[in-house]
Image (cartoon, rainbow, N blue to C red):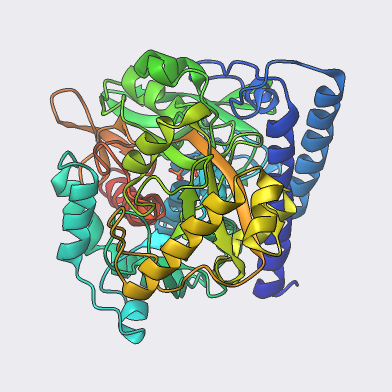
Length: 535
Ligand code: ADP
């Protein structure tokens, strides 16, 4: 038997390969318009993330095929459940194998249930796999150990401020109050997030990352997949749920298409919807936000809003659907997100003249608004070797060819085509601001622990991209799905990006991973309680 550590490592490697392949597909494939919610999985996989390119070339098609082949190889090695082990009935069906779905499954299993996870893509992970910053939590044991003074109230206030006072405050209270226990729970599952950084809109360090400071998504997903396997929870991939079935107003199973052809009806005593957001569904984006048509998306191709459509068909209701987060720092060619950690560890943003133009640590919506005003919505993220060593995610960006470098500031300026004087002057002024702990130009207050003086220097060209859909189905703190009159639909639960309300009009970086763990746990616990009470 492979030990837990080796198994996690193998899963990590295979998931990393899956991500790379999806990315390879995104960068070069045809910009097939994503089908509306409920799209057939094979088509969604072909469409890749809704990128901007339009030409469907032969070579692009070939790359897609290679990606598909290799990814399904990855699926086999990760060890998803073979179809011949499918049962006709489970206690709880969980739709979606991202962070929220796998977390819910683990809690449901711990409560003595027999849950199943159906994932429509070829690999588990969803958008969770791509998350980079970390998981926000307050009053955690790791913060205490590291002398970081934080409080749930401050976390509440800052998130509310970041969401422009539009967050569902009941959900937000539950969220902050259960954040530290979620960190402990992950730790007990072998997923340790003890390296703490800060994201935009926050005043305290509360963004928890893996010990080595690497991107949280791959580590979290590989850990959850290993736990799901260890617990013997069946996880079927290429399992596209099309409908949630109902009897006498109670959710009692799903209709699911396996491998793009065979539809089966699976019964259950409760259903948890954890299908993620709709950032890869261009039709829905256009419907709710015509101004965002044509923007690149950082989302994985399976994020098409299926859960929202299925829940609405059962009388559920959605909130904040037009609240779509555009991330300010996305590489446009590969639709790849450059995490906030680069700014949190000291990076700055400059325009084509080499000048700063915004408080880089302001909230995502404000930084995006500033970039949107620039020529071609184009900016450069500038950092030094110190930032590179502290923000491990940069290694991944470099491997993907997104990072340019120079041994001196002037050399970097030449490499990226900016005026050397402009960039040099900006860096000198910035380093003085760091030394004085005062940014007179833009009032930045965080991510200023280190200046930018360690050669070589680096740049990543960025612009805004659709990143996260804050709207979604309405739930209460028991994660019960609510109908239009605010009553719970019996047997139906939802957690994660598919739900709306927590973030209001603007999500703070690091709050989505916290959301999927906190509410994913609750969905598993509450669905199990429901099944026990209604066997
Ligand atoms: P969250 O962060 O809320 O967990 P993710 O995007 O990480 O969201 O995961 C959601 C998962 O649900 C994705 O892997 C996505 O492919 C999957 N999914 C979406 N729609 C369906 C569907 N109709 N059937 C099965 N899985 C789905």
